Length: 407
Image (cartoon, rainbow, N blue to C red; front, side, top):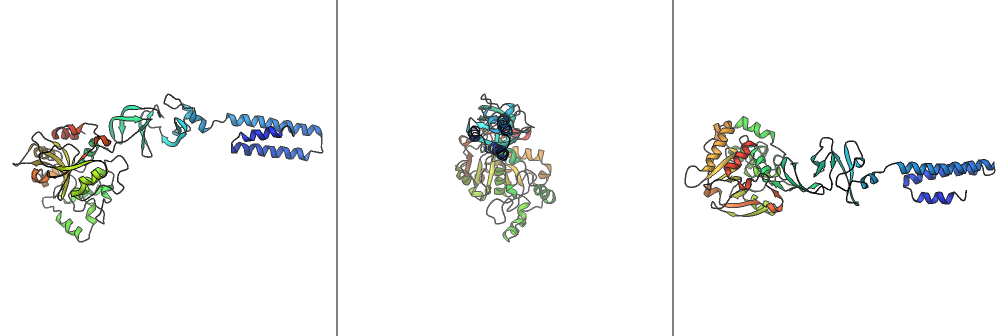
């Protein structure tokens, strides 16, 4: 027995905790049996020693044959796509290696519905190829990420999301157009200090269209809601959007990163400068003689709006929430009763939102350039991760509207 035990002890040092416990248990049982027979037959003691050695050898072989999760991950194909034996569950990728074992991370990414393309996991986007994460894939890959179809830069299998996409921002801003009334305090919280529940809602809040259908008419006025709000009754905030509530909701629904935890509803005259302070772009004073591109946000005294583009005559097409018409398109006018932008706005609202047009048409689609275009203009910074997948910032207002109408 003295010759067997040192070898067995050395073997224990090379085993995992589970294996060690197993071998120690076997050793205890056999040693106990040999001890009980220490004064017994010599042949029985030899038999026990042989059995013990055989159990050690067979058990070592058994444990060596069991594949481990670590070895499956470490044996990944270095060409960039994981082998089938690295998939540790039928419908999931449980483990993959970032070049070295030290960088290993655990993910539970269901890939049954995605053979090739992008997939989200815990807020991150990864590129899946043939049902497996192509972890070492680096380059430009065309696909759909967060609802945006474009060419995406992939590094080590992961997509670094931009802050937003101008196309995404404009498409979101168009969703409540023609079906949401201007409501004083709409989008704010009950304390009147920041974004409320509706401005933190993903998608169009259901009560907006319901309130529009029940209340829109030639006699609608936001002033009753304003008086109620100022008297402390804040129930109106769920029924529609005011100007800053609308912009805050549109930005919140379009930011692809974690963003501001408290949302983006700020005092209207401070929206442009605050977005710049958040690091999303730049803010500077503007006049009617400046260039305005799709996605620009302009703050003026008592109002804020989003630009959809500029026309050849210099007029600017905007989308905003305005008394009393609510969320709608308007065009700036200089020295006359109409402009290319105001005509675009009128034609669009009349064509696509006849119910709105019958209530508010003609009186809200033209706004004064001298009032609306003197203020602070916020522009998204492309070098800070702002995408423009459709190139809308380089298009005229008419081209932008054609693109949005076709979507």
